[in-house]
Image 1: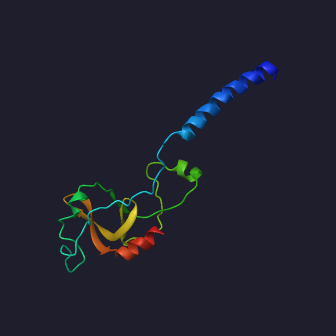
Image 2 (image 1 turned 180 degrees about the vertical axis):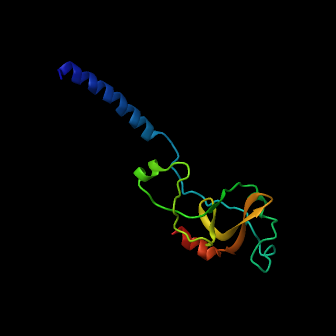
Image 3 (image 1 turned 30 degrees about the vertical axis):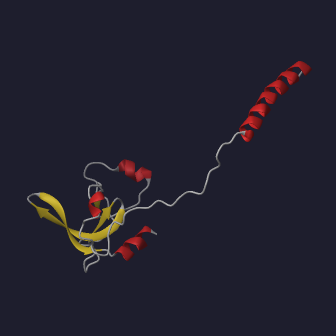
Length: 141
């Protein structure tokens, strides 16, 4: 780089130095500690019934949130080569025995087990076992 180019670069940096000094001298408030947010409780002690479920007075805010409910019949692993060989009429063996309960998943999390039923030519699931909150937490790990 020539001396002229270096002098031009120093002039540009000098402008930045002035701007940085000006910013440091200004009375910009510094960030303070964040305040804790306060929320209303979803259930109060008056709302709890013997089963530990609220009567619904404060749960109204979350009752309209959509969730995805799905049933899992079973799983299997296969190579891409075998996957590409599948065609109409192919049978895929799953890791469950016939008659074993289905897994009932809410947003991908196991919450219950059930069995397949047919009602008016439509499939349904009869819940046979609902997992306790402790069991649900174990399935997340």
